[in-house]
Amino acid sequence: MIYRSNVIFLYLFYSRSYEAMQRVFRIFVYKDGYKPLMHEGPKTGIYASEGLFIATMERGNPFAVTEPKIATMFFIPFSLKQMVDYMYDTNSHSMKNIQSYIAGYLRRLASKYPYMNATNGIDHFFVSCHDWALMALEKQDCQRNIVKVVCNADSSRGFNTSRDVSLPETRVRQGKHSPIIRDTSGMDRPYLAFFAGQMHGKLRPVLLAHWKDKDPEMKIYEVLPPSVAERISYSEHMRLSKYCICAAGFEVNSPRLVEAIVNECVPVILADNFVLPFSEVINWDSISVTVAEKDVANLKAILAGIPLRTYKEMQARLKHVKRHFEWKNSPEKYDIFNMIVHSLWTQQLNNV
Image 1: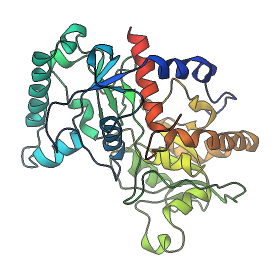
Image 2: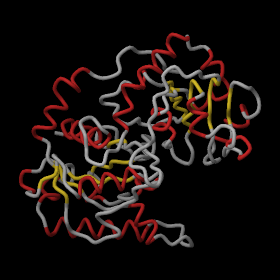
Image 3: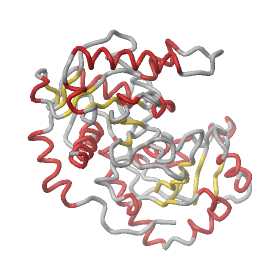
Image 4: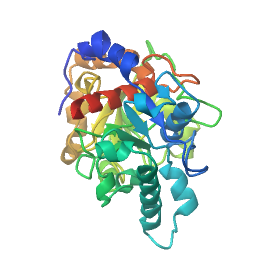
């Protein structure tokens, strides 16, 4: 269990790294390929980070350049979510056709341009929030070095912590460009912990077996029942809870992490091997609690044992972190788009 630290951000982020990135980091977007599989992606729902990043790169921003010779990195603008929607055969239970399509596309880029071959792909990247992103380039030797910017940042299943980038999974509602962010200052939070979600994976049924209807301070549900939601919505549960459980499903990631942050509900990371986004900048120990999956039976004792002062400090720090998880119509300094680019910049410096 981890929950104490006084430093939210690394000092060098503000004083040097971010400013240096703005001055010299440039990204070239390949124009090859056709919609809907390339150059567009979902802009609503839980895969929105994938589509919104592609859209921001496509329409231009301070980092995008049209001359590849001055680029620091090269963006490969395919959407795995679009490929799954248009190409996946549910009867096949196989990704082979999608993997083959991506491999063919990358081979065409490598044969048409010199940039991928010149660096063996280490300065190329794609962005995906689909669960299958880590398998997209699986067993393709010539593309193995391409940087994966993915929501499913599972260090035990192919996510390379020294090269790849963890992408925040952000649920965007229809007609909204970013999660609704409200000021929850001064709100009474009578519940100790809250979770509601589908029973994906092995961990969540265990969580419910231990805590559903077992303790009035632990609001642990499957999907929020209509009779409950009519009185207190999902978001209101978050704003009434001190801690929000971010439990692994089929994969380690979930939109609950961002939802907890924007509702100033201290995230409880219950997902072993999850590489948290922006970890090169954000000290997650200062704003969240990490609990090992094996300790789910002790969840209340762990949370109740955190001193009130420590909780209040963590909860107050979330106000300073919110802006890093907001999508804007046009990119703004320190917003989620710029933070993703900074993560790429940092990893590229490490690789160099």
